[in-house]
Length: 186
Image 1: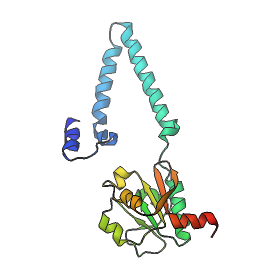
Image 2: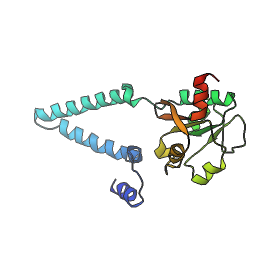
Image 3: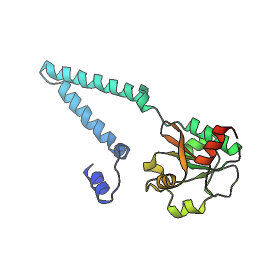
Image 4: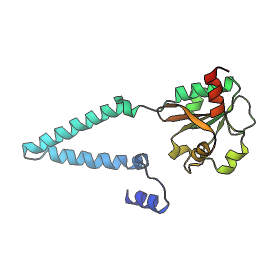
């Protein structure tokens, strides 16, 4: 854990919870040994603490599964918006995962000349964005994974895009002129 945190500090890399996943078996082993030792303790308070820990852990797991604030990424709605835009001949930039797009049948391409396909951007650089035709819609998810240098976010700030919708873990931006035309019914 210290090595991971140290590497993150030295390399100016944001260390997130998911980076500690490989340590889970060791953590489960240590917690299991601790619970076994507490349960076999002579005092009744140790059994009470063990039961309390297990009960709170179950409640925590249920909250992660069912609480609205832990709702999963909404690839379905984001892909539906992108597919609709592609059917209408619009240019779409997709800054999110490949697997979710594939699952919801969103055709992606890294080649901007492909028609009826969203342009897939993974951690783009300024040169990449300037070489692409400007999109009507930008769909982005989890900037720490898909826009780690903030290049796409900076592009959105500097160009005439407005937030048109959001889904869990997704932001959708649309060019101001396109949004105004659609609101006016043109």
